[in-house]
Length: 158
Image (tube, rainbow, N blue to C red; front, side, top):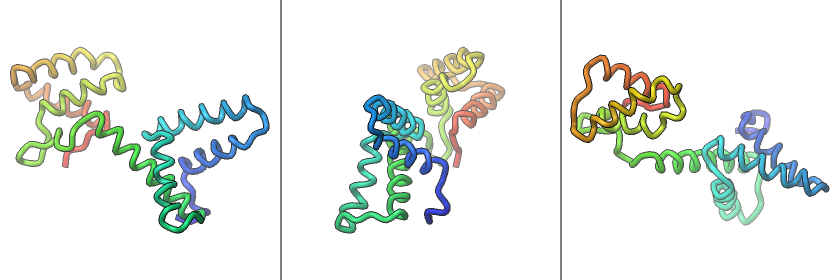
C-alpha cells in the first residue's frame, strides 16, 4: 500500500496521533481518548497498535517508512480484530464434522451478540439458545430466522 492509497482507517489513526503533538494538555487528553475509542471501534487497542509498531521497528533496526507504518496499522487492526473475535468464541465453535456450524453454536453466538440487534429479536434468540441445554432441535422456520440473524451479526458459513 503506497501513501497515496491510505484507507479511511489509517487516515483517522494518523490524524488522532498527530493531535497528540498539541501544546494544550486538554487537547492531548482528548486526543488520547479519541484514539482509544477509534482503536476500540476497529477491534483493537493501544497494545495492538504498539505490537504492530514493535514488529516493524525490530525488523529494520528502528527506521520506519510510510509503507511500513501503513502495514503496522493494518497488522495491529487485524491482530486486534482476531483477539476480539477469539474472546467471543473458540477456534472451532462454528464447525461440526461436515464443516458447517451447529445450530447450537449459532444460537449461542447470536445470544452473546444480541445487543447488536433490534430488541424485537431478543426473545426469539433467548428461546432458541435455551433449547441448546436440552438439545431440542428448532423447527425449519426457526432455523431460517436464526441463520438470518447470524448473518446480520457477521457470521459466515463456509
